[in-house]
Length: 376
Ligand code: CAA
Image (tube, rainbow, N blue to C red; front, side):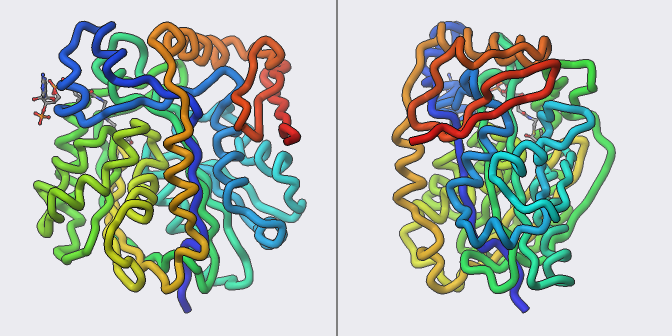
């Protein structure tokens, strides 16, 4: 029986900072960001958004009434949790109006948890083929002002509906490797991660070599903490894809930045949206890396007729429809984000949410979040 991703959707905030603006303020050559690191834009989370609203937008973009009725489990992968106890998926459950007999779990293993969740969901559905699992990833990559990581920030969410007889992609089991490493971590008392970016690149490549399947794929997608990580990974990979294909693999990340758990799947969406080839029956390689650290290589086979459940025009439109903000607005939004997640104070009426957003954070009362679905 085939098990895999029936549908996939993504959401990135409606605002972005062009890397030219950041380079100017940080006194850096813009080519370091655009050519050296490979980032053109950074998506910036606005005040009435958080990991829940982003996950809601991504889920809402793919789920029908029938899908919602069939969901039995929600796995929410994040490394930017808003609560040490309550799973963010509880809020998603309420706002999507899902049935009550559902299990909800939040999973953490740096940027790997979404891949781990997907693989767990496959086994779950294999045992109970009539069930569907909603796998969500949502993160805000925030390294702090004036840090080396600042140029690699971003925010966004991915939603995947996992089922038997998937219409988008059959997902195959992966090969994984784990080792405790100090490349990136954020203890519970820290607002931003401690990261040794150069060490992390070495750990990433080392893990890729360990799980390299030594197989030729039409495309291989990579987890990308910054777009040019795909270029670096492709160099150590036994069956590198062409430079032209790497451009396709990293195109969406260049426009968005790091979205942590969702990054690998954003790369898949980039390929599904921009590949010139017919991808039906093609198998795509997927390398997932989570600092701390774990690496997994798996593959997925694109199903015949997948374009019926994957609207590439809608994906491209979502990226194109965003609004550029200036450096001052970036500074104020991220200062606000930092403040909000520490003080737990927020009233949405102080802000005007973006007109295209369907879900907004309305209020925080003693840390409890109240969301609103915007009527259109
Ligand atoms: N023109 C063109 N290229 C230039 C340039 C210029 N003017 N100036 C510099 N460059 C090039 C450099 O030569 C370099 O290229 P190579 O990598 O090919 O050598 C590149 O630009 C970057 O320059 P530096 O290495 O000097 O930049 P840096 O020291 O500021 O660090 C970084 C870059 C390591 C990516 C840093 O931004 C960083 O640490 N980012 C965070 C990355 C990260 O998050 N890593 C860990 C997470 S991994 C993950 O996401 C998984 C998880 O589980 C969290």
